[in-house]
Length: 415
Image (cartoon, rainbow, N blue to C red):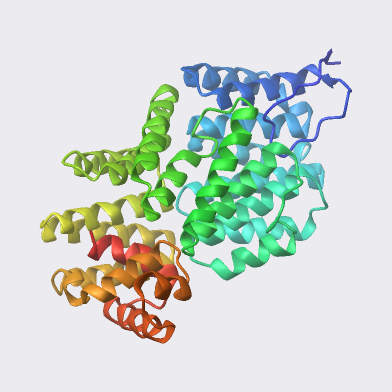
């Protein structure tokens, strides 16, 4: 039998350890792997080696939750091919998959890999299937967070809100700190996507505080600084955006995961908006291709295309947008296909920002910053009806349906 160990505390998402109790050595070792990965120091290679060694010795096979934590540590290294291979091997092991818990953990990990790569829609369906059979607990909270994230990736914002609301996660959060951090990140993503930029920044900053309290510094866990940086840009806090993005890039380079570095480069390029931004975005795209990224790659390609067009390189910009559309189609992501196709149509008509009147541009930028129609009216000394009229004109000229699409459309048309 495995020996007993001290109760592990810290970042172990989806696992509830007994209060004041002890856990077996296998669980201690599995939890330690996750904690080492979460620290994000220059130990990515060591984590990869230790997971392989434990796997060959079949150590984590003894306990379902130990296997979950071991796969999670491997997931944070960015070696998604190995995660997939291990899941496939386990799925063929009838002894291991005998229990619903073990089958559920495998489905959960497969869904998470799909969300990171090119299967966001399928990932959402897998998370829904899991939630239909899960009871209350930390793993359910984590599944809700990841389902919300998947729905945001494919543009299903109303459904994402409904999932959070149905699980009591739209207000104050009372779950464990690790799961609460993931809920805050998912909710922050939803708020940024729907134009609630300051609320989104607040969620990501709180997420960061929680992760720091758990000694989580690795952006491969949650890239909260990059997301907060993009929200800060939307509310014109450029200094904060740059500081956050620079911190995340430094942390990502320490860990060495291509995806994490690519995501951080993307955010910093947008925060800087200088002569180095195009090259940084191009490097981000290369790394995200290497990481087999899905949504993160689409967004980086989209923003690279937008930036090139703003710099007068319409041909290069359209190349980036076309690549974004191709990846979106390959992922089956209709939401981003529509966005990129609309951006390509606008870019073919010349610089669309010239089609907006100065007043329309002012109204559009305030709406993008999260101002309500009434607040915009008060700021610009206009009637609310006039603001509504201007916004309707902006939506028509940009070929979008409402505020949820305004930020991305303006990133292409308004500097």
